[in-house]
Image 1 (cartoon, rainbow, N blue to C red):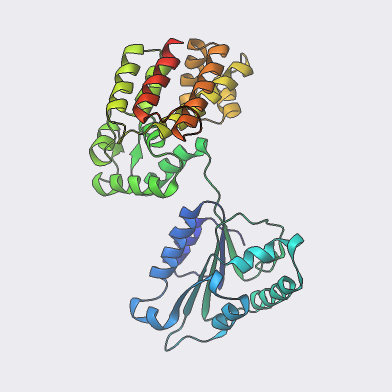
Image 2: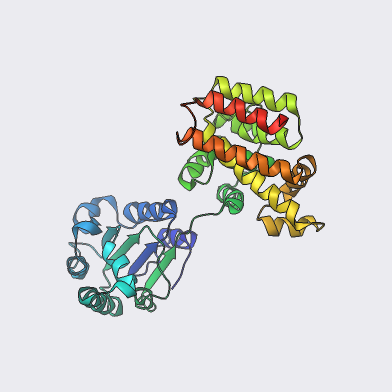
Length: 348
């Protein structure tokens, strides 16, 4: 049975547990969140030392894991067996590479899944995305739960943040969502950490704006990547240069790399807007994969920057990225790269 991470967290709190959980995917944050909940919330603390086993797949065979799962708890109703990075599951899932040994493992796995030990909660994690057509999954149909943790795409990151804060009873302004996304990037672990700062300090029912983000997270309302991008969109040369100089003089707190990612992603979508022609904002939002609230930013930039200019900007951003990585040019500092790039965008 497939379940979301949110559903499983709810079941853990209500003690509605399946005997086997397989957590897999390329977004480690949700897997780590679930493992933490299984470790801390299933057994009382005084039972964990005797009846909770946290193992690493690279150190154990499937046979030894199944032997541990088959044992009975000591003076308790349940034992918890958590296997982190279960490489043998990943090997079984790759059917084309299965040798005889992997086929034997699959038989052991299918036998346990068909008749799991009722007093054991077995949790296995694989931090890569497995094919849902694998026999590994079909064995879990009756008694197991599968959680797929996929990377959150850039255009869905804002919605994830809104939902995360919403679960804590906090609203957030759309412009502030964009500010946090541009500052944090697509790192769910870090995004959750920053959002938790807001949850601790902002009362339930309140709406978070840029003032709260500046106060509790430390993102300047005036000097941040989002405001820099906004000034560029509007071709507000004075404001953009002012922010660029601030970044340049404080490059340690405002490194070039995150700014380059933001600008590359933005102007790549502006390039798409030039291609779509005369269509509605709703259609543009779908085509370029952004929240409809922000479509106007892209259409404004498309008006202010002709197609040829957008292509030159993307090329300049790529070159700046190569300079940051030391691939081309002399050993330029972030300060020099930021100032040079901002001048190219606004004046060339």
